[in-house]
Image 1 (cartoon, rainbow, N blue to C red):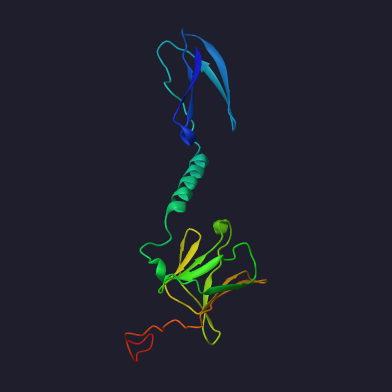
Image 2: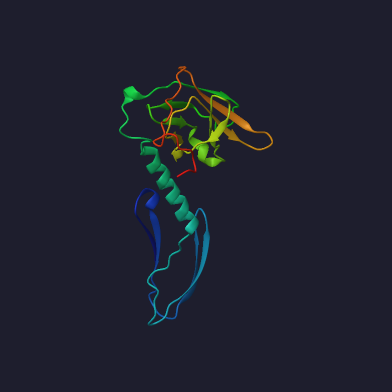
Length: 196
């Protein structure tokens, strides 16, 4: 006797094929064809032994499902919380090259700068961020990646995203209100780095 049934719903729906011999000493083969694989089984019925269930687990399928769940969860997770909307300042211009990862906008909340990228920035290399000083020098800056945003824990007047070696792609993010961010004050006046 052969029958099939299903359990679960949506992405979790599973089809079960039930095979129940009605007498010992029977032998047959079963071919199960799905939209992704074909299974060839040799079946034999015995008087005493029985295999109650057989299943296959594919780690790649589990990884794909996990990535989909993580992407769905990330899509509904806010980039930042406890930010007053009246503190958001959209005062940055974006100029330079036009690679697929070019930011769509940049803004700050008075203490952090948020750089928004296209949704698919995670499908390629992510560019490092350099703060450009008033003298033109550049310094690699720390930032966090949250979804398709870089979050920089400081304000800046100008920064550059750079990617590549021979033919470098450069995107400049400049503050356009003319104000310079406040300088950080050292807690140790008169001391230099490396001195105790």
